[in-house]
Image (cartoon, rainbow, N blue to C red):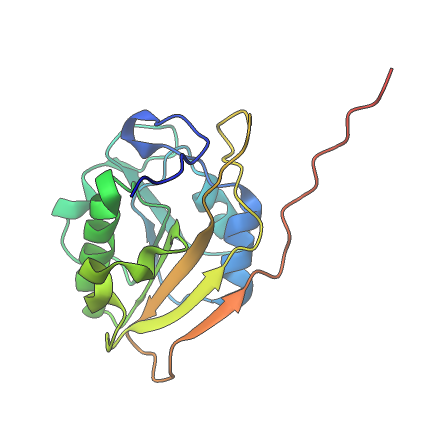
Length: 195
């Protein structure tokens, strides 16, 4: 079965910059205690929103962008910070994104922390990712974005055909997992004036 194109060209290292409204929707639904690690920080789009809300955040990336505190491969790092929040690289068939989730869960378990990953809305549908959701002790919440993302570093042509959601795992969660829907709509584009 063929899958419809996302509407965007594939960008080297999966650098798709997250607009502020996307992270704002996460912070309406979730608060975080302790240090936050943004391990695929790119040029700091998520990082800056977190800082504006008073969080202490460390940004790393495998590529040396301007916001990076340390240039490193997240998948090789030991437990360091309580929380991980990122828009990870997806890789082929979401395999790299799955590795990011699995590693983030492994390194936050020590601290009883949280993981928030921005992923395609169907990420929880894959049978090879079932272990991350069904009966996973930390699985907490899915925040569905009802507006499609126009990546901050890409000039829109047709726009994306992919829907996204924040997936949240919390090692201290004792409630049943829930699904919620975004509260803040994405900002309207200014309309072009007719001459």
